Length: 352
Image 1 (cartoon, one colour):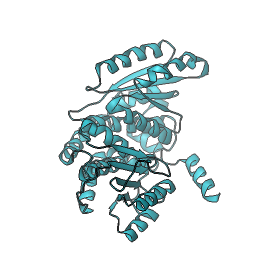
Image 2 (tube, helix red, strand yellow):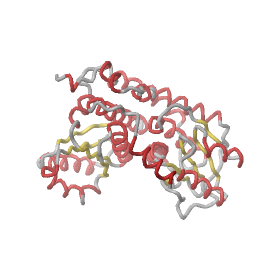
Image 3 (cartoon, helix red, strand yellow):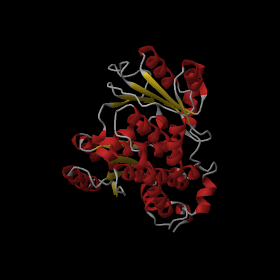
Image 4 (spheres, one colour):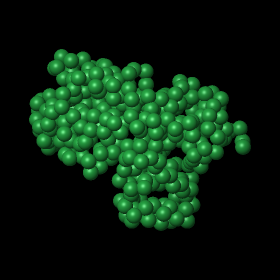
């Protein structure tokens, strides 16, 4: 194997200067710690006939998407995402609004918090501090404190567990407290098989090499649809390359046609995130679509979730995608931590 394609622990450490791999490998402990932090916040169970809204951006919002997918038909009320400055128009005082901002200074989430307070909606905040925590404490709004020192995208276990627990407390879905502990143990075994000390041909390392030098398009369906989006954003931020996500069967009705021009534009790849509980016709679409894309010059990969419960299976794919994105960064010799383009945009907005 060429040294440039090496993914040994030494090579990972050489490129991953800030130690992002450690945050990914800490996923099991993050799941358990998140449960403790919710319990320690002393939240009271309450009934929210108007459902639940998770207001947040980027890595702070992903937990809401994943939690909604995990709950599936065990969600008894609507669970919506507000990824912007405003809450959904149907939000009422009977809605629980979870405002999630790792830094506590995300301007869109601060605006959503103000909107929730103006409506008189039951509001809960999850953050490390910043303006959001300060205002919440002034208003007497419960705050679930997050540990500092992470990149927001590395706190995925916290955002997922908090969203699940709040959904259970407000009546939007079943409480999955016990399942989180089991999922943490499950993912520990996967880390042993997939981490930097794993064989050079382990699944995430082999997949990263297959995607290296391409523009990946990640597809999911049902449980795996939000995970596909998570893969896309992790590849964007960690590996610093374009990547896109779509949902099957919708992508079969439009995006598939675009692969006719792929070979003329560059190197593209497609990853399909499968799950044992997917609708049989969706799984058939995965295979047929893979074949059509391969026939148009794209590299294709199918990955199946691992685990018994929906939470275990979803977490397995989240871990896999996080590792793939970090291994891609190593193959590109780029430190996964900094996001200079995003930082430049924030600075320009603050200056404007």
